[in-house]
Every structure is written in structure tokens, then in C-alpha cells.
Image 1 (cartoon, rainbow over the protein chains, first blue to last red):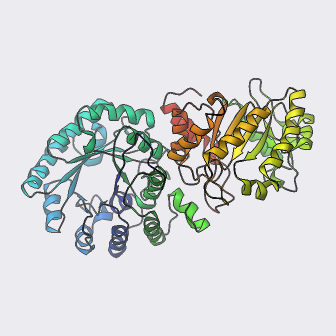
Image 2 (tube, rainbow over the protein chains, first blue to last red):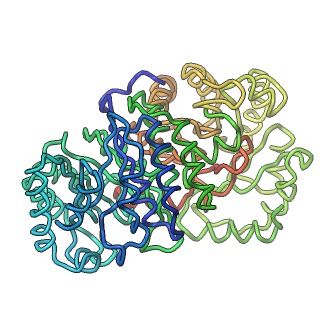
Image 3 (tube, each protein chain N blue to C red):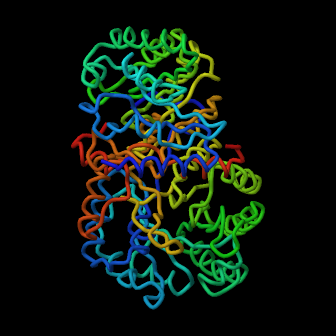
Amino acid sequence: QEPQASGLPEYIKIVEVGPRDGLQNEKVIVPTDIKIELINQLSKTGLPAIEVTSFVSSKWVPQMADHKEVMRGIERHPGVQYPVLTPNLQGFHSAIAAGATEVSVFGSASESFSKMNINCSIEESIERFEEVTKSARNMNIPVRGYVSCALGCPYEGNVVPDKVAEVSKRLYSMGCYEISLGDTIGVGTPGSMKKMLEAVMKEIPLSALAVHCHDTYGQALANILTAMQMGVAVVDSSVAGLGGCPYAKGATGNVATEDVIYMLNGLGINTGVNLCAVMEAGNFICTALNKKTNSKVAQASFSTGTIN
Amino acid sequence: VVPTAVKINLINMLSETGLQVIEATSFVSPKWVPQMADHTEVMQGINKFPGISYPVLTPNLRGFQAAVAAGAKEVSIFGAASELFSQKNINCSIEESLERFDEVMKAAREANIPVRGYVSCVLGCPYEGKISAAKVAEVSKKMYSMGCYEISLGDTIGVGTPGSTKEMLAAVMKEVPVGALAVHCHDTYGQALANILVALQMGVSVVDASVAGLGGCPYAQGASGNVATEDLVYMLNGLGIHT
């Protein structure tokens, strides 16, 4: 590791979304035991948070139909968080019954995306989430809030930074401990990332912010770097870059955890995560899915047999 | 091996995109680089648009003379910041390679031909591993003093990250004015755009890239190589930077 580059956070918390966001966007339905094995391998890498599954109706998301079995089947390592998505109160109760100790809710900065994705307006979705956060508060369960389309929407195009700030503030005020700002279709660039963060940072403390960048246009690492230069210290990523983009066939989706860690290691930033171990987990799931990894680091490392 | 006609077509298409500089070919012996064996035909076959520069690689005086005879108006020479890489790649030490280039520089000066200098392995070497920023600065300075109008700093195996990019540029910028610097980042580990971003933040305003990310990495089978011009332009457009 290099000595830490000035002006950047000393520690970055990586939130691994591969088992949920990643697998959800993979076409092949993954057997329950493979999902459990993936999560168990990831639990041994040093990752502090691993998004396990989604308590959503299997009608909508068949890949996550086995949410109870996965939640109950995984090893729970001390010091590791295992958040799950809960789109509504019913999902929340189901998650708690299955042993979840942290949940997430998903808002959108785009009205059209909200309607097309979850069939209701942003306002209606917020009301739904308020039921979840109320119950969660009563049970001492932390809730993470996601804001999608933070840098652009597949239907509306441009998304105004102030709208992102407004939705973020609503989620934060209702009790979300952290807001993950998602560049859902990966159209953001360092310039738009900066503008959006500036607007959001007026409403929400920096320490409660995370970025969830998609690499659909290859911009993810540059965007993450920009966010870190502004002080953001929580980054979402997906092992092996699992999860394509449902809005752009053949395009990539999530940024690869391996590539993020490579950059952070090079910058001397602490993550607590073992890159080799993540690459092994990535290799496991790619073999199981019979697909090539989307991680450039994994591609380069497995071919040379060494990690530079 | 790509047919000559396809190469010419590619370059002609690139000439219509607004790109100001397109590296056309390499006047190196076909024994070493069979892909560039048709260098004379390519050079003579492409449409030369006014305002666009078509530099070619010239590893030695003979290559330089062949390039000029074929109509080249700008050439490039390639040095290395790693002694081992220089030995393995062109069979001589850094010092010997610079002496070879001196002959090219002299001839170029007489013919009023601008010369661009490349320094490879600036952020790491496939043989030596870590490369000191001071060494990169030293080689860059030598090439600049010899008369290269621009020095392109190449992360040959793409191992650099924003931190090492920053450190290396800080050292080089003590010896060579930032206006004469370019970065040539490989995307083998997905770091290219992040590295280019910090280079821009430090004042570098010349960036090398390859259409469609052409060119894998000869040191890591299956890995990617050059950063894609399209992805670079996308980022610059998003930043409101004129290209």
C-alpha cells in the first residue's frame, strides 16, 4: 500500500451489493445454495456490509424468491452487516421474521422512474417507506435509504440536483441512517457527480452519504474518485461487477468491487478488505453463472497469475 | 494482421471526427512488428486533412528516413523509465536508446519535423515492478532537452492509480512544463479514467486514447489495454471540456 494521498478519506466503507443488486440483474436464476456460498465467501473478505437479498414479491423479482432461505442459510460473521431490501411493511415483517437486522428502502429522484419501477409516485413511495421506518425504529433496526436516478433517468433524461437533495432529505428525515445516491444508468460524469453532491450536502451531513455508481459508460471509478475528493466515505460496489443494466442490453451495470479496491489500495486508503479474497469469490460466482467477470482487475490478475 | 485497406479506411474515418492527432503507423522493421509492415503504403494511402497531424513511430534513423520519404511530417520516439523494460523491449539500455534517438532528433531538427517523446512504464514495469517518480522525471527531462516538443507519459501495464499518477506527475512537472506533458493511460486494471481525471486536475491537457479501446495487453493475456477514446470523450463532454 502507498502512503495515503492527501485530501481523501482515510477509510472507505465498502457496501457489497453483488448478492442482491448484482444477482437481481443477472438473467440466470441462481440456485439458493450458490447464493449462500457466495455470501459466505464474501463474509470472509473483510467486507463490512453485504446486501443479502430482497424481501419483494417473487412475482416481481423471481431471482429473489428464495429470500427467506438465503437469509436463514447464510453464516453471520460478527462485525459484518447483512442488510436486505424491504419495499414495504409486509416485506419488512417478513425480513425480521427471517432474522434480518438491517433493512433498506429505495426511493427515486425521478417521478417517471418511480411510476415505471414500483408503480407509484415518489410521494406515495415515501409514505410506504415511512411505515417501514416507523416499525424499524420501534425495533431498533437501522434503515438505509437509496435514491435512484441521482445523475440521470432512462425516461426523463436529466435529473435536477435539487430534486435528488429533496428526496434524500425526506429519506434522511424519516430516519434512514445513510443515503446511497445511485447513478442507476451510469450516465454520470465527474462534473454531474460534483454538482449533485454539492446540492445534497446542503441537506445531509457528509458522513451519512454513500455513492452507488454504475459503470455502464465506464465512468464509475472517475465518479467515485470525485465523490471521495468531496469527502464521501461510503462506496457501493458489486463483486465481479455482477449485474448488467436492464435499460441498455449488453451494457455493464454495477462497478466491480475488485476495481474499486484496487484503486483504494493504490491510494493508500484503508478498507479492511482483502482484494484476493474478493477475486476468489468473484471467480466462484462467475464460474457458477458461466460468465466472464466484469472486473478489469480480475481479468488482468487471473491471466498473469499475479496481482500487481 | 489487419489489411492495409482497412487500416487506411479506419484512419480516414478518424480524420472526420474532429480528432487533431492520429498516430498512423510505425516505421519499424516488419521482423519485429509484422502488423506495421505496410507502413509506407498506409502513410502514402491515407487522406491527409489540413489541421490534422499524423505522427508515426520511428525507432531509429533508418526508420526516420523511411518515414520522411513516405511523407511523414511528425515522428515519435519511445523511451522507457525502466532499465529492464528497455533491455527486454528494444534490446538496449535507456542510455543507449537515447543515443539512438539523438540521431533522429538531429535529422528531424534539420528537416523541421516535430518529435514527440514517449516514456513507458511510468507507473510500473512488468519486470521491475515499482518505478520511482524521480526516474520518470529524469528520462522525461532528457527527452525534452533533446528537443521533443511533448512528452507522453505511459502507464504501460495500467497498474497506476490516482495516487501514483499524482506523485509521478508532481515529480515530472518539476523538470518539464505541464504544457508539454501528455498522459497515455492503459485500462488493464480499470483505472484509466480515474488516472486521467487526476492528470487533468493537475493541469495536463493532452490525453492519448485508442478508438474502441483497441490493443490488449501483451503482458496479461485476456486483459484490456488502451483506454477507449469513446469513454474518454464521454467523460470530457460530461465535464464540459472542449475537445
